[in-house]
Image (cartoon, rainbow, N blue to C red; front, side, top):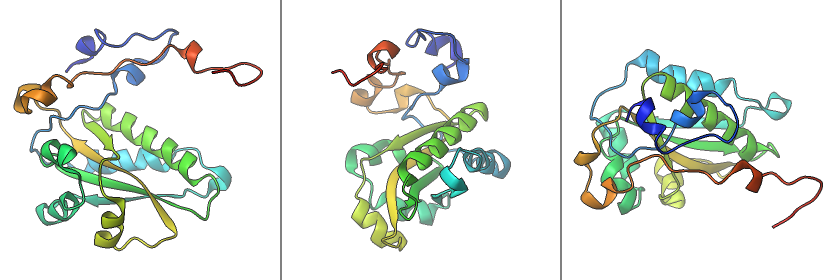
Length: 189
């Protein structure tokens, strides 16, 4: 889906860079390898995310060989596995719990990664639908690291290549108005 098609689904309440509107989470991936420079630049962008006391608690375990991807597929829930098997790269995002703000900072790194991927002509789709305990065991992740999300990275393909039920969801999602997220002075429901 190109930028002008995305605009059919997303409109900002206030002026922002188009990159924020154009980034969304497609599920239809081409089975096409990503050039080393393009792939590593998304992790380079994540590297520069804000970090409390410069702790940089985020880590990425990636799978880009067929063997590694199959190992990752072993802990992905069926609903996600159906579409993410075509993604050429999977990245498990983990964070060092020693840092009190590890989840917050790692979320910022994921945001930077996703925007750089979009700039590189790639798509990303983060998912929580996987078995964290199985991922920890399969990949040998120590307990001091929290498992945050699994991200599929690649090139977008046509939505018609997805199962019919998924095709209906293959579009950018809207967001609630900013005024419903911002509270001034104190909490309100």
